[in-house]
Image (cartoon, helix red, strand yellow):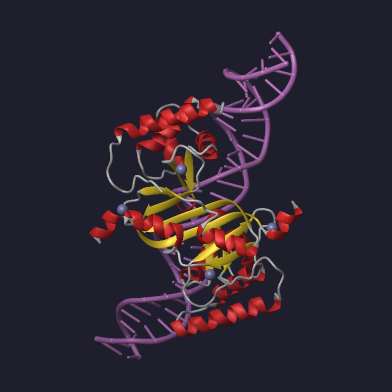
Length: 158
Length: 158
DNA sequence: TATTGATGTGTTATACTATACGGTATATCG
DNA sequence: CGATATACCGTATAGTATAACACATCAATA
Ligand SMILES: [Zn+2]
Ligand SMILES: [Zn+2]
Ligand SMILES: [Zn+2]
Ligand SMILES: [Zn+2]
């Protein structure tokens, strides 16, 4: 359950490393990391906060990479489908994956004060959701696990 | 972690019992279970599936209880705020609470085939979300836990 | 080479979800 | 009663997401 936590970190390498990892993964899986897709991933990586599709679209539009909603949504669909980004249901927003490697089931910790989001992970078939599912014979395909509250810094400030 | 599971059950009493429990709870807490609020609760109780706000609004409109979105959203805000119903983030939809008693933290099992939703519950500060939060000093205020997949019947059929 | 199919892009239009705001009515309580 | 809070309604608008169609590219194949 490694995670960047809410601490500051060397952000310079986040974008470059993230894109490089995605590019490598796409090559290995014969996926096309096109211009728009890569740019959306970079945009998501440049903040560690979740971004709405229209917020991303604003950036694309300013750069002449596309001006209509489907442009952003198509790129986001690609990124989320293949695990390079995740959708945060609670926020109707998207965030770059911070565990770019094996398939994984993310857990998000969302600070309602500073809006930062941290991704943790653990197997969803274990734990309380898995138990609930097992009791009723339910077959889990996807788990949404998002906690809203205060990050350490904001909790201290309060 | 009691739950109705996905089995059939005596549905006749679901609506009456649910409304009665809510009425009693409102009386004890000096909350007003007004006409629209009660009707929305009944509508939610009459199916065990989650319903969108506009779907509920359609029913209200047909009954002359209100025709504009805020009517439905206001009632739903009341019901969710006080624990008589829950919002399903994954579906942008609402469902009547099936644990109308103590405060609780629901877990939803959503069947993507028949669209039924079952509510289970367990303490969110325990389990994997709690563990993830604790590791980073995050203070949980609300947890979203929703699993999407196949209910026993639909899994058998497939 | 010509054809076909799969994939990506661009655009228009529309559907779906949710809230801000202004004004009125009704409940509650000193 | 008057004061305050709560609930109500409707209009308008904001925010989120997808359907559908046209065009381009590229690879496989006939
Ligand atoms: Zn991830
Ligand atoms: Zn914070
Ligand atoms: Zn409940
Ligand atoms: Zn089912």
